Image 1 (cartoon, helix red, strand yellow):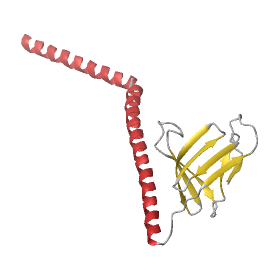
Image 2: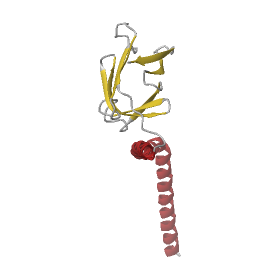
Image 3: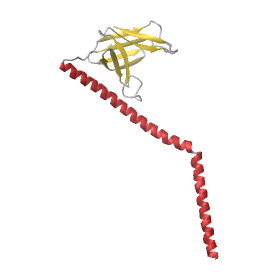
Image 4: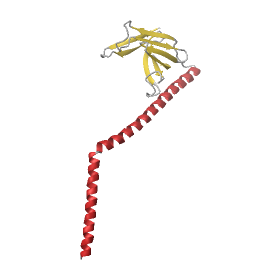
Length: 185
């Protein structure tokens, strides 16, 4: 009979230890759930961000190559031709630079589809451009627009006249006021 009591006491002690261990682990997880979830979600979001940036870069490159290829094919078929403009386009409102607003912009387009430019004589950018209908799309190299941490290409688009005499777009000042920027040759 005493052996049965010793076995029962041993089982009861084991069950109590296991129960306390489960309660302790549950409490630890409950108290530290924010830290545990944040680490996992940070790791996941960084991985997703890298995948997204990589996919975006590939998609932009593929779209650009596809548009160029299609335009070239159409040009050789005689249906339509690639449109390139050449010249230096400027915008200058003759207000001194220094308040953080855009006062001067220059874009130099070349006939081979490349461009270079600057804003307020402080930022320099270069890259390629595509003209489709009445829209010119600038594809900037990251080294000159935003730095290497950005995606490979940052695109902006402007309206361009059919005779390539000017291009324009809407710019918002720091206070939110819209201004139409017109760059002329």
